[in-house]
Length: 393
Image (cartoon, rainbow, N blue to C red; front, side):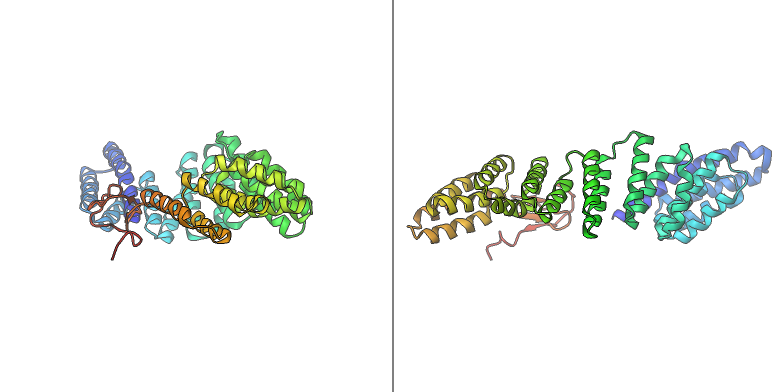
């Protein structure tokens, strides 16, 4: 379906361009064409539109190519045809068409740039990144199309994992367009830091992390990288600061950060600090990870009964299968009457059943509590089915 829509996007982009070509042909008919020639072009043009409307794209393309052959100055139509060939996977054909346009001597500067940009995109699609890089590097020097060329260069250098050049061109793109690129540059700096860390150049890796923070002050990845570098250097206190800063910037990454952070707290013997941080995160992160970690610390310091009571209370607000398993383990470890725990588990399970969907669309993934024959999201029929964990047989 996506490929079909993409293809028809280009068909309908071609319609106004072809119409413009037909209008220009008509305007110039008295100067360069006989009445019969203009009539022939007009007839061909409308036949092409008819093929498009009747979903016969191949025949439409051939007719528009014929128009381009009859009038070599239909530049926009030929550029659009090249784009269409590329979208259909006929990259070699697109390259030949755009190369021919680039070699024309009657093009304006703007048209020359447009043809080169299209040719560079052809090269990218065909995997000829070195040729594409050459084209876009030249185009980036032209203010008129610098943004498009720079954006393509960023993509090329990402594919080649040349992070220094990716950073350079992203910085230039931001300067040219005013569009903020800090988060992307921060990711590139972190890629560079990761590479430098792996090669043993720790100081250079630290410098890359500093630059990542400068580009994106809230970079979670930079904080995690900094924490790992400090752990490897034996600086647990510095690692704790880095990991905590990363978690506060985006608590959703807490499950990735907690194991290394708690190990640092354990090595420095700062259990109160760990409990305080986990308590803070429990207020901002609705997942179960900080609660389970804090439960283990409570168990170690205050005993199984206190830990079980704390966890049972927390699970009433944030039901979790992992939490249920931990609660069962604590109850077994305590050796107490399991009746209270069973009541807690029943309450938690009821909440989980209410919150989770009972049906899901096999086409788009839409979840629902009740059955729909037509999916409310993608509008397909007969795709919303019961989930396996909901079916009773």
